[in-house]
Amino acid sequence: MTWLIVHAAATWFMVGLIWTIQSVHYPLFARVGAGDLIGYESEHTERMVRLLAIPAGVEISTGAALVWTRPAGVGLWLVLVAGALLVAIWTATAFVQVPLHRRLGDQPDASVVVQLVRSNWLRTRLWTVRAVLVAVMLAL
Image 1 (cartoon, one colour):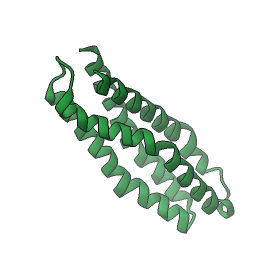
Image 2 (spheres, one colour):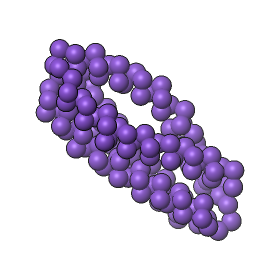
Image 3 (cartoon, helix red, strand yellow):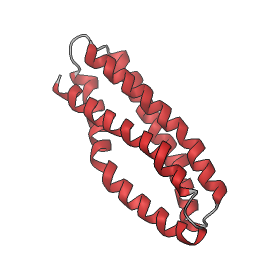
Image 4 (cartoon, one colour):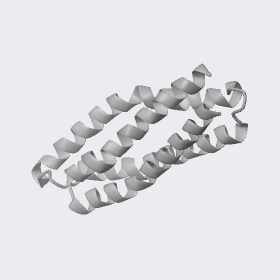
């Protein structure tokens, strides 16, 4: 049960973070002037990496640990579905969000900010579904 509690805490931290990014932080990119956007983007990326490195690592590692050490009553299928969502989230991060951030850092463009906000809805929804699955695991 310890792995699951730690996993749940990390997952719910990440859900809170992604909703904050989606509803507050990313939309504010549009209010940064073109001359300041490169610096703002760089600072955003640096600070976000520092903020999420530990909780993301904990979420990934404890999610993997649950495959072998899940509490009684928590089916392997539930852990695997939640894990597949995590893989989808980080795949979207690597292949969609990171390239968009790089584009913003190279050439500030309001259309890239719009793409960043719109595409991030996928991660926001997936993490929210994951959090519900993890809550179900805790309830079992």
